[in-house]
Length: 438
Image (cartoon, rainbow, N blue to C red; front, side, top):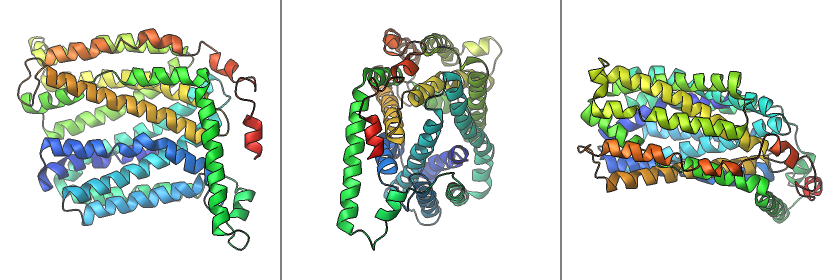
């Protein structure tokens, strides 16, 4: 349900774009800054993992934080709907809502990891497919209504509707199957412990978690795949340049772009289903290799849209863009699922939320770097909001550089490598059992 809510929250994405442009009258650069800053909470996900793993609230490590995240999200979108009138208020509210989603994402990821740890690649893939499939369904629901709601009722109405959605997270948290921790229950009893002792206990937990996390990350079994994840995500992207080309050159309207979002959400769900049905047992190295090769080739089809070759074939820009988005999104989702499976399977017991959050933050950091590299290439090639002479060259460079991480596939564990690496306590750090007992 939490993943579903995350998908449905996409209802506000189109509304935010129109709000910043039409209501606050921001230029593209200012809007881009706010959008970029709003991603900041996703880059510090390990901090949320430390809190969730090391500082249970009211005796619970997961349930309490989900309730708080839901309330924070509801307040953030309520503020957007009723009070925000300038770019600073918008930035604060959007960042707060992003924090709500990012923190809850860490918590539910840790719950998924706890269930996936020690399972086969097939079972781990099923769990991750269920999670991301739920998010994709939520995205489909939101994409269907986003454009029409904005056109009929306005962006603030959409923000008001969005404010109700995080409350579902708080409601579902009550039903999370989690037993209270006896030690924490005694610590939270003010009659038995002083505030100083509470702070000391929390600090000791954080130090233990940080020490254990550092020792875990240093293990080559985890470090090397993590490096691959970063470099695989850090290849440059031409998405921003293509957006400007689609709107300024081809004249795509927001209503049509809303339909594209719907197709994207459906394609994401199809990608999850394709992976879960046919590909979850494929070895990781083989999976990454072929998705990268096929993705590079298929992404070059965007050259037809840029050069107008699609019209020579009798295909309109709208239909070509829709079909191209459908195919590329399915492939992108299929290629992203192995990252989630790999991250879940290499997380040992004791730091599930923190380590998985660290891996996802590194992945997000790689994506941010890829966006920055793409922006640099865009500037160097002179592609602007109205000059697309070198856009075809930009597409070629970005797609060819996506092949650069292929030699790093050797950093990934071989088939069965993850299970064998963590099968023996000596390899997975001898202090693990003692750590769990403390």
